[in-house]
Each structure stands twice: as structure tokens, then as C-alpha cells.
Length: 120
Image (cartoon, rainbow, N blue to C red; front, top):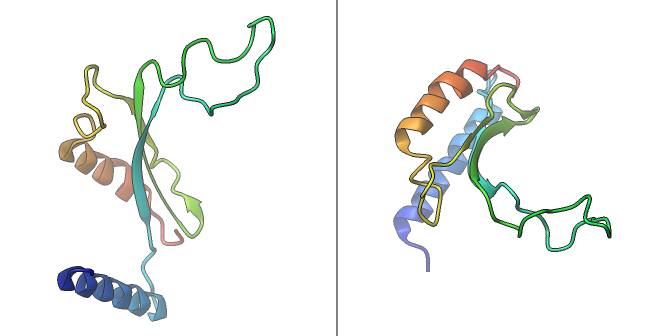
């Protein structure tokens, strides 16, 4: 069972989206996400050369961790909104020590809002 407040919040959000889309001057809908990837991460099976001259040199997942934040809308990714940086060394199991609220606010104000155009 879902909590009533979660259901109410989702319904409110969906009504807001519908109202915006039906508006004579709708605001752009922008979706954002953040994730991380390890420097040498690769799929379980990838192309290699038998002599070892090409292909992964380290075990998958070894190496530095990079944080990726981006946003997009109807027209695709927002130019200039990509944030990618090397995670702090010694970061714990996830990336939240590196992607904190201060860094997120700075990205939101300086990269995302500055680059959103009406046609997202």
C-alpha cells in the first residue's frame, strides 16, 4: 500500500503538469538526474585484441569515480548543463559525499538555469 501523502503529492504533480501543458504559454518541462561511473567500468563482455594491445587494462570498476549530472527536455539535453567531475578520493559506497547540496545548488543556478531556453 502507498502512503496517502505520496499519492496526494503525485496527483498534485500530475495535475500541475497537465495544467502547464494545456496553458497558452506553457513553461518548459526539464528533467534532471545524477549518477556515477567508475573510470574503468565496462560491460561484462567487450571487444579485445588477443595480444592485449586494446581493451580494458584494469578490472572493470577499478579507478576513479566520476559524478555525472545533466538535464534535458523535449528537445534533448540542455547545452551547457552537463556537470561531470572526479569524486572525492576516499568517498564512501555512494557518491553523496561528493555531490552535496552546495554543489547541486551551484550547478542548478550557474549551469542549468543559465542555459534553459523556452523550447526545452
